[in-house]
Image (cartoon, rainbow over all chains, first blue to last red; front, side, top):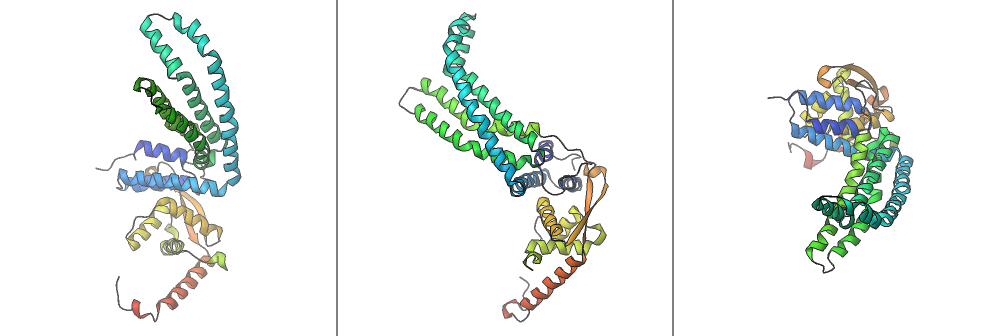
Length: 217
Length: 110
């Protein structure tokens, strides 16, 4: 049986991330071929290839925009990390003593205190939001080359994320018991995976969907 | 001129455009190359190649009609230019000269 609509997620990603020459005609071609009996696996293959080609296309065509994306990522993310870290550090015990310790019932208070103090949840959420915002900003500023610019920003923040994640990782294996290291490992996972994913999500969600009649240029 | 030389895939795409005439857009171009080569062709690589050929002045493009099965998106039709035809003929002559008289290539089908 031939499905009437190509895989929705693939189509959604394609519409949001594909760029390059005659982008709308390319999407139309893929739709047409799918209607003529191509499989969902074929559609996914074409989508991934088209997005990968868009990345290369965008960077080759717009090297200056790529540099701007790198600068934008660093100019926003570095101050954001230090600012949120400072705010978290200075308010951590105040929040604990004046607000969290007064919450009832006690089990909820314990959960929130653990999330606040041990897991560093507010800091991680703030960082994920910051990374998402950068992705959103880059895609909004460069809507016609969003795939390439998002990839560039993704790569730009990787050294910092890996370096930061590595330092947390070494802490986690400093010979401490599991109940102490587990939150650290979880934090590490959020830093290594959650932040880059937040950046990509921000970018994908920001990208304006072109209308069918719109030119791909 | 170095800019007018064609890569292997560029030549295939250009030949498909010549072969299809007025009906040359992404889908039949891909079908033609797939039928000839027996390999799956990525749609994006066709458009990237056609864009390169257009920059070289070997093809021109125009926006065509949209159909419901394309999700309302218009086709982009391509047509080979005079310069494009000259380049294809030149490539053919070069390849034929290179092919001819090579004993290892005589009579085989592989």
